[in-house]
Image (cartoon, chains in turn orange, cyan, green, blue):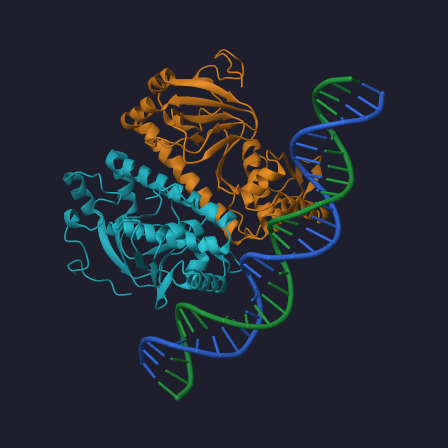
Length: 250
Length: 250
DNA sequence: CGGTTGGTTGAAGTCGCTCAATCGCAGTGG
DNA sequence: CCACTGCGATTGAGCGACTTCAACCAACCG
């Protein structure tokens, strides 16, 4: 896990040019506030598959995901695991005020983190309402996502679960690329079958079977194992049980 | 649904004497801040079983639960429902900045709400860091609870789900009454079998069967349908799959 | 008394899990 | 170049946990 120098091209060249400048905790900060954040921050890269933080670890830092995808997962003693959060670029890791980690943080792909030493960051929260406000907003969004997810976990069938996940990833991707909902949507799945299973509370075999079934029924098409093509987003939403006609989802 | 006058004895006699003074959004407020909150607040009672807010309703207020229990639930078009939040005294209803409700809010028991008109409350959040800070803390707690719940929904068996729910209610009750963990714990279940099923992603029949099974196995004892006696809290935690010896749960 | 509400119990069915074999593909090293 | 290995994914067969459908019970209430 080679730590790379700050000058490496994969890192933002100053906060102003940062890719997540307008999504992360710092998005509301003024230039002078960014400068103060700059003093307590450092970048860190983690390879796909590595665990960034173990449950119970002392938290020396909090962080923003700059690029790549990470997951928050919980594990029971007998090995059953459940993903409880999917961290995309801009998302925040860590809870201010908390000494030790409540979940494992695992790098799903190679990731770059923008880390802040915890104590100084906590002080900044108190002094900088812009950070606290943005953090509240982000936390409320995560809570909404968690609750939508609870409906998926508790009440949806395996097929609906898969369709829901695909719809979420498709939606995020569409938001990024500003695609319309009418056209074909396509994207790469950032998760292995096993990770999808951990996300959805299924076994990886069931995930595989249901994806095959959706392909057989022409709800989706596949190119290779990971590239998904959605010919009709409405149809996919329908399969997800997410309402057939109310279109205010995007 | 009779609105009762502010002088009724069930309402707190001023914020200083309020039962949830030290748990609600206002817990960090100074006397002068409480006075300003007082100007935009009013009490409201709702009978058990009534829906306080429907998904999509325009939110004219946010509120704290003063007494009783309410639930946040999501419903699919075909009627499947999943509870996504259990609101106890002190808990907060509504999301600042959001125009319309994202979930149904249903009174599980008779409840009393301390409501704040939304717009003035949102202004206060900006001006009063004490409120924003507390709200952030509460939201982070709810997010943790939601994530624990996701593990329950996604990975636990029916028996473990029931045991988990009982453990949670028992823990909350113990915290209230300051009972030790070694002694017998007993409490009233605030939920019907159907509400428990909606909480846990089960059918009410399965809930009933698993409660009978836990009783048969002497993990719990019942007095009537609702009063639960837990002879050995450790045993219950074990049945919940929540770790056998790590005792840092309370 | 009949009606309603919440709860229990039984029998049959099914969806998703478990266990296991097989496959495709990318390295990797002889 | 091919054989070997490892990993992710697919597919099949059988099973079991939970659901579905249905009957029944107890308490409460007009």
